Length: 299
Image (cartoon, rainbow, N blue to C red):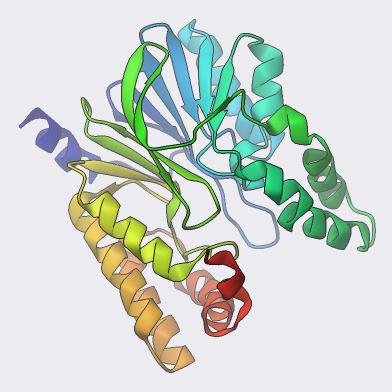
């Protein structure tokens, strides 16, 4: 009953806030995703017996500084960082957290290794070919800091994991990248999904759509009250069902404009993003979904 009350209260929360206590002991630092700039993913800070557990560290220094400020104000050290996957908007703050807390341990899959010689290497080359800009330089600097972003502890399978003296269910999937991590805190009913759930659009660039759909089925089977996505506002289980249905419909729709319209209408109650922004993103992702480019992501 207590978990159900917390989930009901969550629906009333003002998600425009940059920081929010989702439930007692679980704080969300909202990422940003705006036209013309690279995004930051959501970061989650969890109270554990021996300190703070951070899930995803953002991309930009300003986002990571919010994590560090929260830790400083709490008077507790950051003892663990979990990266849900290797995208730069989820691992970019690792080096800054390590500098502030030298004893911190970073947990992630080993997928960054392949990304540094594959997707990220290609991306860096593309950036280097563009006219110089501070934003591009910052991106290349992040990629070049590879080892500072890498995990101390490699997660190789789904299992219970003690982090900071608190036990979580940790899942390893291969849906959006070749190593997606989710964390479920059964005591609070909070499931942290990373980019296995993203709003206002599904970020398909490195994903295998069919495997992603199967992973959403796995998440639906968990007894959670609140799901924190990699981008966007937290979802109740009922709201997650809306997202999951919209995703599966997207995989099987036909005409491009109808696909964009159906997705935008379906997720409108789940996001504060402008419908035109959502539709613009979905134009790109529907084209990508209908191309042959994603087949290489399915192994």
